[in-house]
Image: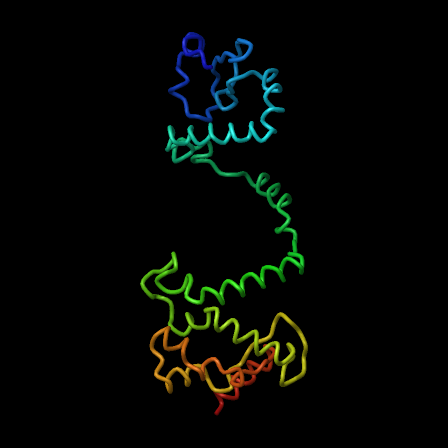
Length: 242
């Protein structure tokens, strides 16, 4: 525990006047052996360094971890503003450029980390099953980021799960091969609408999301073709020239 009397006699302030992670000195007494210590408030613990070794083995057991978790939850309930605003030890400070470089070196994704193909495949399968079972989940007003429908209507259709499935079905049908030049790749292909997406929207009088989902012509895979980026831009140049 912290000895407030000795702290005030030596440093002329109380520990309660300091921030939780302050670097100023305090006087503390070990709850286990009674040793008197002088240390920074940010380094304060109920027991001294020597006595802490007794508890380390216990804390690694399931009972010890459960006890620590319960104690931390009670602490947060009694201190709801802990580590918030001015009480946070990093409040008003910034990382130096040297520290940022260390963070970049330690983070594997900053050094070209690639997710294993097996993990990608599992994520893809789980995502497809989730979208099939919940076609309206996280769409429109049910999404947490909903702001009253400010996203363009055709973009909301192109970003939905059904459009993703339509695109994948066409890529698989064409064996991930450009139907114009014969180039084969799995990452950079475009799925081009033979009959324009906008024309279908006008002809079928699609003005809301539910109508778009139920339109058969919009999701007809025979209306799509796989193209590489170069051939795809060429198709659109021809349309503009016409």
